[in-house]
Image 1: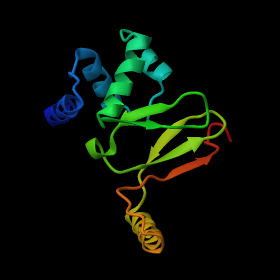
Image 2: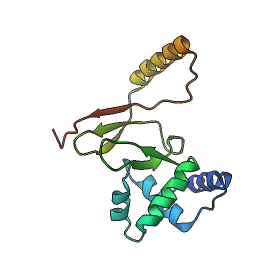
Image 3: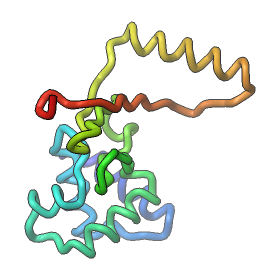
Image 4: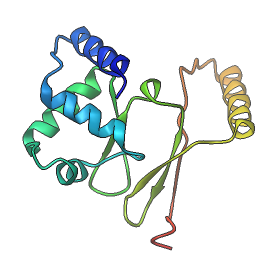
Length: 144
């Protein structure tokens, strides 16, 4: 686990008046080790030492600080992942049957196409985008 990740998360937490506690550090490490966003039940299965109420509260604080991103899905559970600027730019494949979420890294060609589309929308509307996310909603291979 890179020290710079923990330093950055600690700075973001200080920015919203919060401390980088051992529970929050454990959540950041767990999210950094996974290859897809996790639901709170996923977190509790992967780290049985974390209390459910603590996980809810700490994910909310980490989200507020901009260290964690909440991914809304089609089932009852949101998923959580480290903020994209702490990891890498990617998109999501969201299954409308099981609610599963997988990360997907688009090709440079697709990213250029999306960037052109964003510029077109921005020019037409005067909207100033800060970044983009592309979530594809459909049926995963396991549910198909």
